[in-house]
Amino acid sequence: MSYYQRHVFFCLNQRANGEASCADHDAQGAFDHCKSRVKQLGLAGKDGVRVNKAGCLDRCAGGPVAVVYPEAVWYSWVDQSDIDEIVESHLRDGKVVERLVLPDHVGR
Image (tube, rainbow, N blue to C red; front, side, top):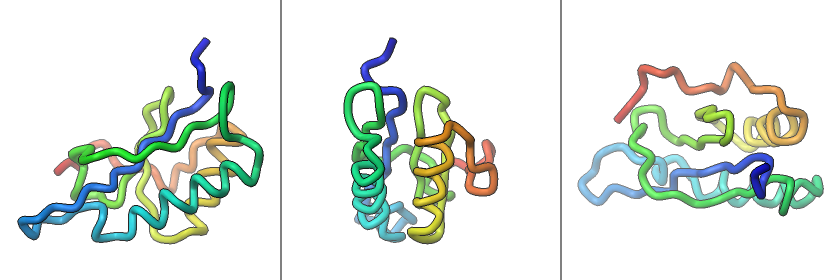
């Protein structure tokens, strides 16, 4: 059994060369909000959920992006209500939020 039930990685990368990056879409704000909601709902910690920062996840064209393991579900979102839906539906209840899943063909 894994130490965490689910592990979420938020890309917080900022590109200096002007290329699109997740930081351009307030990925830090989404990360902070997700981490806060996970704690508020009592999901954080061993046997629960861990929310982590990540560098570039190389799917910039779909940014902002986050990936949830062990399911390897990639998400993109628009606002905090989308983050709430990911936390409550996927992280808490185990149901993927299909409307926010990043299509497989979207890369860098």
